[in-house]
Amino acid sequence: MYNGVINVYKEKGYTSFDVVARLRGIFHQKKIGHTGTLDPDAEGVLVVCLGSATKLCDILTDKDKSYEATLLLGKTSDTEDASGKILSECEVLVTEDEVKNAMLSFVGTYDQIPPMYSAIKVNGKKLYELARLGQEIERTPRPVQIHEIEIISIDLPRVVFRVSCGKGTYIRSLCRDIGEKLGCGGLMEHLVRNSVNSTETGKTFLLEHALKLEQIEQLVKKEQIIQSILAIDSMFPNLSRVQVVGEGIKKLANGNLLTKKDMKMFVPIGNLQESTFIGLKSCDAKTDITDLQRDGCQCLVYDTDGVFTAIYQYHENLHAWKVDKMFLQN
Image (cartoon, rainbow, N blue to C red; front, side, top):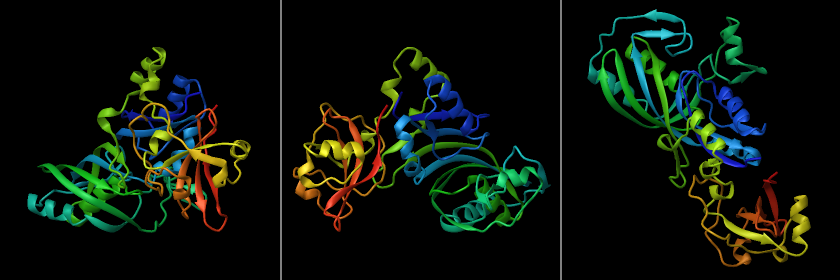
């Protein structure tokens, strides 16, 4: 079984679930999950976790992302993009300056109403399931963060722009809101996700490093795919590394508390693969176990064979390290 993280280029026409289904066939394993769903018509970076790395999925989704999008003014649709049923059409009479001012006004935090065609659950039902039944329910606006908007070109009624935003932001809904502010309506015509990154380190999954499904399939056949899979522990370059000794060997195997006498500092042989750091609370590199005895300080724990096994966190009230996540690899 493969364990680690891979940067996949999701092509247009695939759902994120389709990508995972294809990868299960390519890797011949079931334990695969994706983070940060992309719409079928969208393309770009889709971070996929393999094997025991699926435990990272909840961490990876809490990251900032950047996109390149095309806004089509003068039209609205039920899906808020070009794939949906057109609900209205309006002549676009706004000026380029008005478009720029309207778009840039969304930089910062604003309350965004999520689209009906989304995976958000209401009373146990996903919104898109209700939408397909012809139902539309009131959605509660949610605060989203738009870090930056860069306008690439304006050729009305189309506007091409880049946007950097926080988690939970729908670019379709941003296009809708810009169109509403301009009074002519708008929808998202095209979308590419350029990156998924951790703001804490600046490390990023970039579009230019993403592999298409066909490329991944060929690399698997050639037995060269391992070079493109990021090892789980390489995702945490800022966390100190320790190895269990003595009674700690059995404690780690059972996910029990670890104390100072159960561990020694550990330096893996060879260089860790360069990758994206997951923004967990971390401590600076240490040379003494005592330095890790600070409440909330996390460390990577390795077994006696030097195999990465878990992330532990020190709890002052317990005077010990408690497991955060286990990554037992099959």
